[in-house]
Image (tube, rainbow, N blue to C red; front, side, top):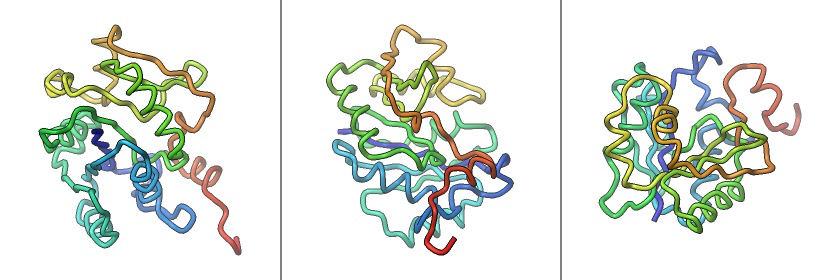
Length: 201
């Protein structure tokens, strides 16, 4: 019913290294996000878009042997997140009705949060559902298939922000009480603040 597109192509410039594969408890940041999404009800396929250090990323994902996970390479990842969004949309199955976009640097997300957003979307079925925490936009975002053509026409950086600006009337804002939807792990300070404690540290 829902295909999740995990955007994992970034270089991690603010982190100074590829943040997707940094340790997060007994996993990596990206693995944690994938596992969170895999456990969510209604998600029947996951597409992971890679770009920076693509061979290292693909090798890691293949070794994990994730079921129902498709790896796709964004050769234009340096052009910004919109190029990754569009790359993921190009490989969707015909049966896909709804698309959920998830950032690979949000390991604080929980399966419960993801399911809460999905269930609100399925109950209301707006063109776009955008979760917010105290007025601040968060992730994941879910859209209907009918918007794919519009997204493929968009240019520039900024990911789906352009879509939100063009079609504000299509957005259903969904307030949540959990700040985790807004927290990215972008830099060393955030990583040190939020990473799980490991026995022996």
